[in-house]
Length: 336
Image (tube, rainbow, N blue to C red):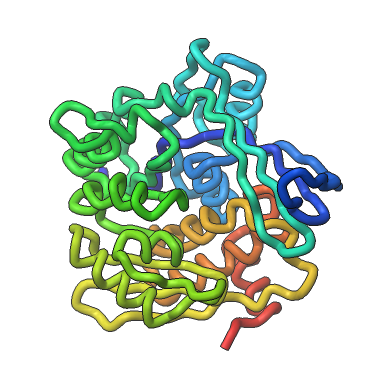
């Protein structure tokens, strides 16, 4: 049987989405205006985003949560969208991982505070590709899982060990990153590049991997992003590297001219929170690849899904069917 659909693996957390007037300075206070619970983490967000875009797409997960109420919530939330709970390993050795995701109304920016919980217990032994018929593995997040970040057998880290197994099993592989420090990113991710078929990341992350400054005074440099993406493409086995940021996205592909695609013009006041927007871009982009679309159309789908995500503080509540996300983008318009 041909491979189809997605296996999202790794980080699954309980998000407490907290809206504040403004993020405070140290020793100062802020007022929370709203608090909402949702699933979070790359494995959760990508999986649910994909099923909201198109419930017919095959999606499965592999992750580790605690044997607690938070773990129960995440399993029930996944089941609400048709995800098989068999992909959840559980442990009583630690509580489920939690993230407090703060959204500042003053700036539109987000701040995450992590409670690691089960994160240090995740290892390559929690992943099994022997029976999956998925086409794509979406794996994350390096930098917040100590056992995965450490050497594993003859592999430089657990991520490499998992990616090698996935490639041997016939899956295409993508790695979701988290914006830790530049040196930590390079140490964790560069060894993974020979085992990836794609890399989708943001402007800071690609700059960190390439050793190029891609953001100056808060503004992304398109040329620098393109150079950085070309450098990183040359260091790995990827067929393409796609980089997303507020103003747009850049895609570099072997044997093809770079593509630049502006983002959606989100109206003032429509941005209720950027938590999960990067995962939404990745889901939209890979939905296009799943459907066999041209690279530029995949980028536009990524932008449209990300724009739809911004309408709520949570990570996936306002993701609509793919056609509706694209129509929203057309209604709001595209940047120049």
